[in-house]
Length: 387
Image 1 (cartoon, rainbow, N blue to C red):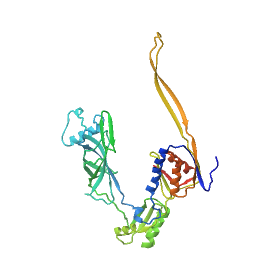
Image 2 (image 1 turned 180 degrees about the horizontal axis):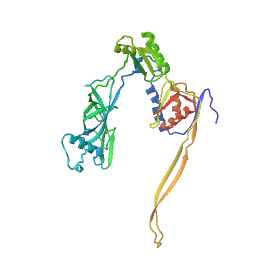
Image 3 (image 1 turned 180 degrees about the vertical axis):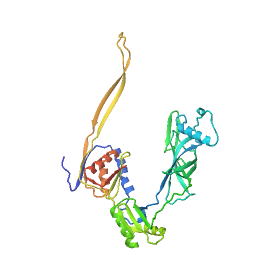
Image 4 (image 1 turned 135 degrees about the horizontal axis):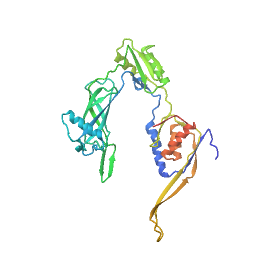
């Protein structure tokens, strides 16, 4: 094989691919443009789009409860003992005692976990959206109503209570041992279904000082934020402590007015490194602007191993007093497809990269392997993130 021209082209060795895969790859590669768009990392933004104010985080709540009123799609309580125990505890708290719990086999109740997020500065009396997820063997939560459920924080304290009818976008039906489902029928939403009972304290300024936390830590961006603030409010107002933290000093200005003014300041962030997102399970690849390909030679195998088993019967000979037995005949074969060499020009822009990968004509899973191998060989620039 002739060596590829290191200045003008990239050579990729690939197996023959059926045409039906070609359209699939065009769809996947087109995703590069749909998701990446034409936005540039140096587009003007505001500081508020790049940072989070320390001391005012979003808090997560969770709880365990029961969903009732299901049309026969709830937990099988004989197989999910904690659902039965929860029902008994609830009834006992209402003054109802059952002498024989073995006769309890409801199928309209399901055990669920409830999760919610409390935004910063939310106060008692405000409503929260919650997500309800089955934790037993219920087949669907559609049509169910969540009973009053306390929601706890990480410290175990109760901060909200949720209840109400569920919204479930999926559904499942079964008959004769066969089941068909759409989306996820065991997860539902409860918009505004929780009410905050205890305000979670938040303090974004202590002793006249505040801290900005960068959403994406960067030495250059942190320094640019500090410089922009000092230019507007005077030297010493902001200090870049680390790539992820900028400290602020407020001299007499209203805290809310001060932070509002800081977050609204325009800034051009530092350009981010080219990034390649790889979903190895679905074969999806997403690239940001700036990704380029250098000269390389890629050899990708196409080996298929097939194992076939056929059952037959061995009959004994006449008058041999033997017995009939079943026999399994196994045949193993391996086949390796022929490879083809494709010469591709150097890919110096995102559009060139898309055209180069299109020309390969590989399946999505093959493209994932190719991109990862090119990165290891140093032929593709960009940070690869596998999700």
